[in-house]
Image (cartoon, protein in one colour):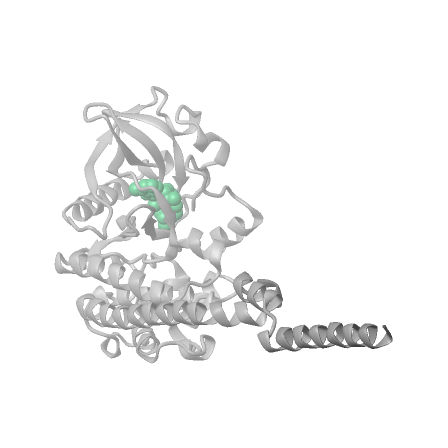
Length: 390
Ligand SMILES: Nc1ncnc2c1ncn2[C@@H]1O[C@H](COP(=O)(O)OP(=O)(O)OP(=O)(O)O)[C@@H](O)[C@H]1O
């Protein structure tokens, strides 16, 4: 949920309000910071009057999420720009929340993978936890969806393969993201690389057991797995369900499960059947349709079992779609080349000038000879008439 954007991303609109409401994080009562106070790094509400957090100089606010405020900041020592997520003061007032934020950030910092945003440092400043991470330039998938509505299958396969690859790295360390959604998937402008953001709800499988016992539901309903929606124990396959939901949305322009509010969405996720993706996207590559439908299976045992497997399947589909795309582009350019002369000769205006010149100036030599003969004959007859008269 970006509320202010130094890189020209869109600010809030009535649409944003809708998105914010419909993507509301269940179990999160902390979205209370006003936009106005959030925008200035020296605003009164976050208590960071000096404009510094540890060695980071705050430049401006990039966005405000459920747990924290994200600033663009400068690492004064290394002179590099970072994204600094600082826990909201009202959330930081809760010791449990503080501990959990730090523990989770530390687990995420263990992952070193090109499809996951790099975490440079996790720390506390005046009792407020913060995370310094790679500053990303580009846009979130949510922003891309807002602009484009739907995304073509070849690109969806590419995005899905990258996300699954990143998830495989996290899952290998026993870390489950638990909040895979378009807002948390970033498209880097220059490289086209996808980065998974915000392991804010990430849990190790072990800590999730404890969470489940407390019966809390955390995550974003529209992309949430049925087991997560019912506060059951989740494992890495819950992230695979969410990935399936996101890919479905990218292709079709809407989520597989919706509802008028969070509660009805949760019920739909757990009980309703979704329209198979090939029904809402006719002519879809069948293999792509199959894997998305399988990712959305209600029971984890019926889904693909690992992110690695998903990444491999999507890589094959991506290759196939890319080859088809190249072949179509080649055919298209051949057709255009073949059409060029036909178009030219059918248009009199564009007929080659040499042909016109040649037809305009040429006369049959035989006609000239006949005319010459007739001329001589006429002169001869006139001469004969003149002589016989004399
Ligand atoms: N590393 C980063 N580089 C650039 N922008 C970032 C980075 N991390 C987050 N942002 C921006 O800051 C905004 C807020 O991020 P944050 O993770 O706090 O919230 P969220 O994911 O929108 O919501 P929630 O945390 O409640 O799910 C994001 O929408 C994104 O635009």
